[in-house]
Image (tube, rainbow, N blue to C red; front, side, top):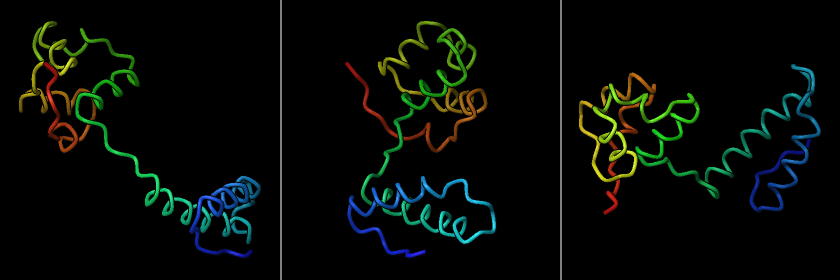
Length: 122
């Protein structure tokens, strides 16, 4: 088990290849320990070099709707009317505090995500 910091994309590829080889190692074995440490090293490198941005509130709502197999009409009670839902999802109107509270409950999204600022489309 030769572990080194991941400093380049080539190092990352080698680490991913090794992790794939030992991924199913029995728990408690030296290869299992190596997989745990490799996973941490890979995660840190990817966070630093390939950060994933948090989606804006409307994109987060759309993603969750897809995950929950919801349609726009399913959000009428939380947002208020079919046309209002459409305006929100097309970024023609901002979410209100009441909408955020309702959507937090319905979609199980964090309020912090939904209160993030986003640009309206004109």
